[in-house]
Image (cartoon, rainbow, N blue to C red; front, side, top):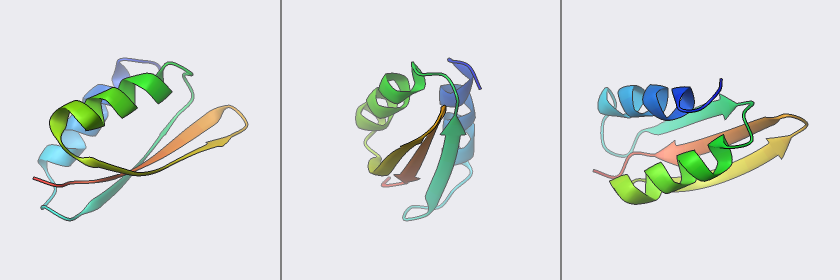
Length: 65
């Protein structure tokens, strides 16, 4: 997915989740690393893990509020 698509999809998915739930997002746009990390920080959720594998970045995000 190319930005801002990963951020939009992450926001929609998080809104449907309960506090404490964990979401995994995969993106192939290098800009997603900064965009998703900043969005998670700005919205108060927790970036549990970020892994890079070839051209894919995988984010594990925990809904905090």
